[in-house]
Image (cartoon, rainbow over all chains, first blue to last red; front, side, top):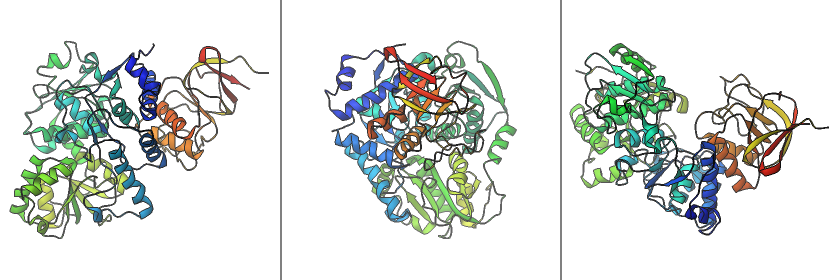
Length: 415
Length: 140
């Protein structure tokens, strides 16, 4: 199979548009050949998951593109980094690690990327539209863009997302093409389930575990209260599996009907999900029983939306936890600025609220205490935090988390 | 005397020689390799405790997170990477890691896709450039 390049692609490849564009095109062409694409296509935007510092090579790559006069060619957002640039005192890191971690984030700005530093670029003004071709990194953002918005991206990552941004091109393969977006495995929910936050997390965990590399279709899912519940479902499915696209019948835009989601074909497999399956999947997220002492609460993985803040803040005022248990909330800097402009956060530190931007509490050293139990409403955080930062997790909904902070111990099933 | 060579497709061209390390299962570089030493550290992998540095690494395919691109590039920079990698099926993530390392550090670690049956761990293997830019894989 041969890869056909346009004259524009050839011009970039041969260095007529600078050495950085040439390098990006060369890498993109190698990648396109390895995935068996026949051509490249134009993209409308990119989201780069390159700001977490993994080693010298990642920083060398961005610095070399800057030296070669590199600029991104499409609107490009940035995922979280290892550092909170807005609240620098929050992250406890030796200077030898802090300097390259900060530089990696800033170097991306020199390439013309936007200083979003969020894992939820779909909450920003750079949110893509239905049907748009994009090249996104970050698993929760990918699944949200494909499933909830109906934009089109594959699972891009390391180096390649930036090469797409630098060339404005992506290989024409996988989920960029309509015929590859067909649902293949059908999950049938039974038992008239209530649309609680935990339901969407539980369904996401199960769908991720059982889909393998097939595209899941979910039927019987109750109408979500808002898109944040679908965000939680997608993030969980992309945590326990490699899900880049799900269809929820009657809810997501490419699944008006079951038939549309399946492109008129029969599913390759059907799996029933019962209330008990969901309860079991959620129970496995918690490694502690009710009643144990609580060190902190962590919300906002993926980053808290403005709507989630509008549900949290009245709850904080009502329950009024003291300062004893910090309540960390990861959120995008644009969302934080909006809240500050609205005066919504005034006095909230008295309830233990600690907003975190630009990063996430499970990828860097923010939590004051790692010896205790942390409570979260995020399936993704509950899954990764014990391995990443070595602590015990209690999973509960947002209200459980706030009431637990007030009680100083894990309390679930609030009145 | 060289045995007859197998031809393959280069995903990154180059020449290399070294002892073969044949893995029966795909290995994810991210979470599977210690970049400081080249040791295999994936506890679920049958070749746990082996070392990839300087070897010709043969396996069915790549596996896992796209962060493996960064790990391979970093291992090539540090000199803890294989001398060459031969896969049965193409892997875009390892291809990106190899080409980024070549771009940054001018080190060409060849990446070849071809039939790997007939090669056992310990065989001395040479990868070279054949006619029509094809990869030539031979036992020494």
